[in-house]
Image: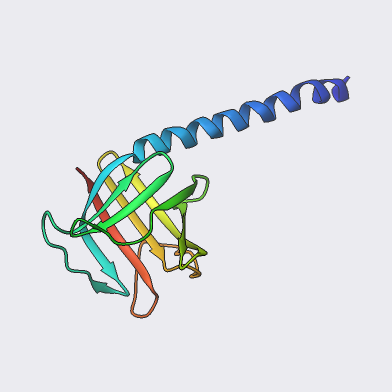
Length: 146
């Protein structure tokens, strides 16, 4: 009897949990969409200078992130993947650099109008916390929704 219940119900429950995860992922991507302006930034443990209105921005769509500095695209447009299970949540930014795939691993925190993003240069180890130090090749940026 128990075996029959397991055979009938477990696949359905697994499918339901996959659907709920996909729905949460889609909601998170929708919440990320828009233009974000950096209000503070640190690179390799040092303050990164920002000019009001001409600083660092990221434009997020459902699938891509485009970073601009002073209105010019700073890096190739990246696709992104989210992992919402760990705390802090994880993000991978994928692009092509000189014709080769490049992945920057990071973490993020999203509240209504604030986005914290900490990531490494391609090939670096994912940060475990929202910190950067001399020589770690990490970028920590706090964005405000425009």
